[in-house]
Length: 164
Ligand SMILES: [Zn+2]
Image (cartoon, rainbow, N blue to C red; front, side, top):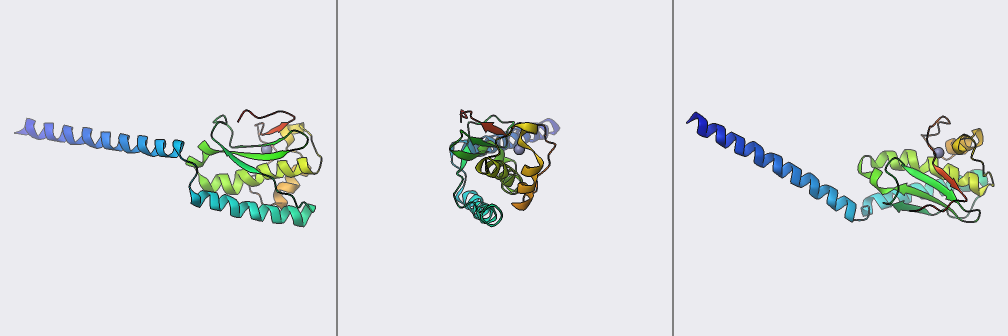
């Protein structure tokens, strides 16, 4: 009788684990194969409008900077700002949205947008990974949160074509 109960318990636990595993796999699969949800895209758009407004207010910049969602970026990167001298763009790493949507929109996006504004204003410096005092001021003016100058990552690409 006791053995039987143990068997049932073991079976239940195994089944439960399999269900959880399957559910997680399914969730990851869904996330990886679909674009970001409408709700998230809407939030990015709202933030973009705010950033554009600030760029106009502080720097008289009227043009749009494209914000692109990529799933081909290296996992270590949250976002990147690029320029080839003419075109300027901000890339956000889709994979990172799975962890925290808030962080990507409130911290990463204004941080990268500030790099893009630097490019727009003609500051094409790679010094300190582009995290100059001027950049920091722009980041703060844009309402950014992640405007720390002492970051140990490279998140700007100048005159290099991103592979994503
Ligand atoms: Zn940066």
